[in-house]
Image (cartoon, rainbow, N blue to C red; front, side):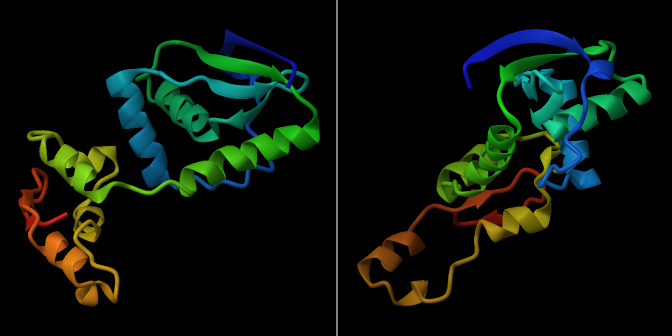
Length: 170
């Protein structure tokens, strides 16, 4: 990648990646829409200069497109990082961007603390339903026999979820 530019681009000039390997459910799009309405567009789409194909941000593009259809998004332009990149590297970039996010883990204790501080917010609107929050309390099999480390985990302070009201230990 030799050249890139952060610019505003008309939605009509952009092309979603027809070979996008990431599938966006409508739930995912709704969460992105909520985030866009709350925080606006804070991340640029990454676009291949020669084709104007979206490499990173296809979900954001779809969310903005839907918001425009619903008359809830005024601008017909989005912020893009336009990169000069060949087709093979473009595909690698798109896949690697998605995969790298999957390889990260949540710090469950920090996440539970953060979620519990969002009192008054509809967490489901931001992608956290009761089932997702309950998963924070799951203990992988075998953790009961971890000795001292397992004892320390069991001694952690409980946290109350502001969305569902359930109390759990992260």
